[in-house]
Image 1 (cartoon, rainbow, N blue to C red):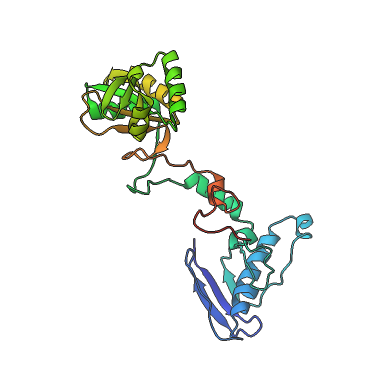
Image 2: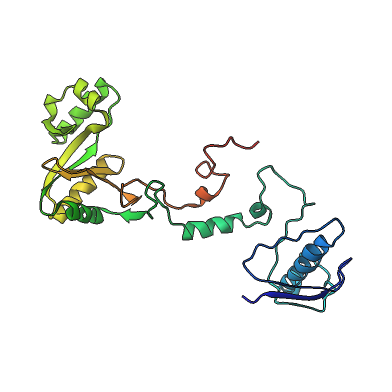
Length: 282
């Protein structure tokens, strides 16, 4: 865009003021009381931008819009459509911002939803979408032709709940649990051992060659379906770090799930967009 060139402004107490404003810059107009700050910003630049914007509408539409007088200037070109928030304008709410008062918030939210790129806060890497096929290829790249254990976490909050889950798994034909680093028959794992294992208690769904990506993808999909969308794959020999695979958008390094961009994330009026560390405004 070309810079906005103002020549010979004499609005109110301005005396033949000329200046050049480059687009994309943050410009501060400062001075003592009566210097003409508002005359320049509001009554000249904003007034002419708003006047020309209104002139672009049909005569019928213009009758419902505020009509501003042409400011006394020798030249002012080019003039983009202008938005102004007057310090004298009443603030309707303690939550009001420039975006809400200018009716820009929904458009900015839509822009951020379209252009946002979620980034892992720990590894500073852009999130990538993960489906079963891509997850299987990631496992193959890690393990080659070795065998892989496809598992998913089993969360238990008490002995009775564990016994219920164990019976349900048995009915589905699942007979193995990974307790710590050991694969054990499901009937040999008492509630005390399951509770002691905590987050290291996982259900073994399959033992498959890592280069059999078709079967591996099916097993990962099954693990996702039976859990909260988390599959954990590791080498059958127990060496190496387990690979955490989470369905959807996630960090390519640690597998951390990242939220998909949606309008509520960019609105303080939505619970998912509100700051968790600050109390709600009255």
